Amino acid sequence: MDAHERGDADSKLTGLLARVLGPVGPEVTCEQCFELLDQYVELEVSGAHADARLPGMQAHLEGCPACHEDYESLRDFVAGTPAPRRDADRSWRG
Amino acid sequence: MTPHAEFDDRLGRRLAADRGAARRRVTCSGRGTVRAMAASDQRAPAAARRGLDAESRAWLAALDSAGAEREDAVARLHDVLLRAAHFEIGRRRGALAQVRGEELGDLAMQAADDALMAVLAKRAQFRGESRFTTWAYKFALLEAAVTVRRRAWRDREVPLEPDAWELVADQAPALDAAVEGKELIDAVRDAIAGCLTDHQRNVLVALALDGVPVDVLAERLGTTRGALYKTLHDARRKLRADLAGRGLAIEPQRRAPGGD
Image (cartoon, rainbow over all chains, first blue to last red; front, side, top):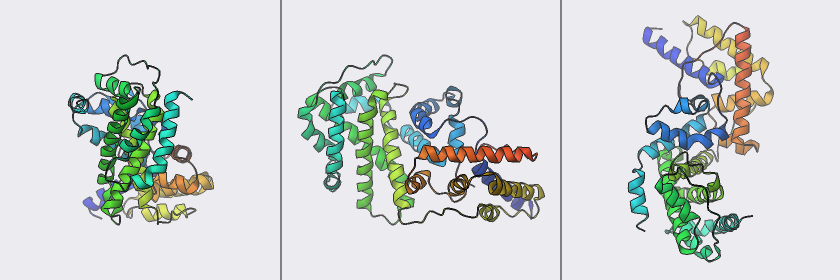
């Protein structure tokens, strides 16, 4: 096994252990994650320290693939959505 | 039941009844249904909205209004949710390679309809910690994601009661030269076999090793996503404790879930 193969094997081992053993430290539940997800994403998109404001979210997102997918979707959708003022101007003209 | 809750309850039943026909229409199902229901709409109590951004206040005011204004707001909300549902289904299209474009549109409409019902039913819980639209988007994205996961697994068997230790060994990378890694894998395999209940072992293997989506497993087992994740969390805690007892405290690097 050369260095490249060894690095690949170490990476796979780390991934396997992470999936089986999950995140370290306290984490929110799936229900709490969904409750806080919009706030977490807006904090993150705005550049604020979302993990400090909402402790336990990052750990849960690392341990729960479904919630992580939901987080990525909301983050990407919000990041690609026009700013609220432009939305409001267009929406409320009917 | 408050007047708006009653309206939303009736709207929900109407939407569910209309869904089959509405999803085959080109036009927005929410708009047509809301117009039919608007005559019986009643004004809701004013909510405390201090601190909200102007757009969110406008959304809530319109949804709490009556008649044509509320009908228009609900229809626009449905449009917003449908856009989010299309976004989610589009990014997950790879999991639905066998699904035709027309059905993808139906799935998006179904997700938007369900999300509309959830948003209307739960809007009193909106605390203004984000924009109202961001709060609403998550319902559409969740409904669409769950719909896609379940559709993708509809004809697939979910493996349960596997030999977990065999799976761990199978998924372990080539460790011939990584003695410490082999020792760790053996310890994890032994802990999975010896520390967990059958249910914890099945859930751990299905979710963490087989990659079964938690929504799919919850549907098959007749339980909830939250309950299954709690089972997974408890199993992981047991494994960590067992490994720590063997002097193998594990501190994996922070990483996104699901990948290798």
